[in-house]
Length: 296
Image 1: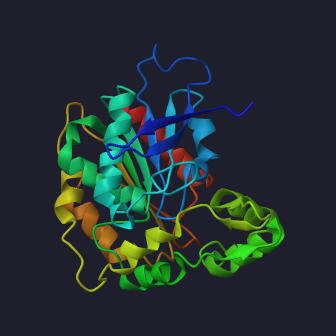
Image 2 (image 1 turned 135 degrees about the horizontal axis):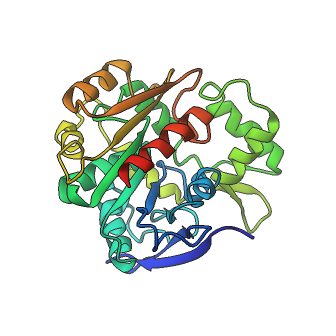
């Protein structure tokens, strides 16, 4: 029993894209009026990134976890130039249209959080609430450069243990003190078994091309997108920003400014973590569930 159904939708440029559809376990999603949740992963992540959070949330509502183009079980883009937040947003709009979803709560990690802010500039009335995980309108150069260093490397490993140790060598500072089991679990979310029997990262290495061209010293002004997410909607919109205490992508100063710009937003800093919280931390789960109750 997986708890979800593997389903697909089509992008406007003809790609077959995959999503996990966690229907409410109790069958209440259509009867209780509880809003569906859309979970949006980070740059190199996929639908599996939410495989521990989604079943818990699906006890009371529908949860959709897409693989964006070039990730997981979604087709790779024909042109690497389409690996951009704008295109990901267009793909997501096609999914919402197919599934006839008018209003939803969005949970987004890193790139996923930027996607949520972008969607707020286009259709704020459809976002009933949002959780932004460890990202904001200002992307710290240190974090961006670190990500640029490892995206698209195309490393492979002979066993899951080797893969786990390889990922720990990259992300260990952000998630200190964990056992091998934690890192094997992380590896199985980030990687897949290739045709030659080696473990490889589960994304198109070409997503690195437009990302490498991003100038960390000439960032666009994303504050209007954050403020759009804070715009008024009927009944209000609960907003939550999560931050790892040692995040190198979302600074304390940026988080404080986000809260000043959108006074109704709340924040939680998770101790001893870097970029990005996994969203199965007990404190994170508790505040996410509370936000969903308010959004309903």
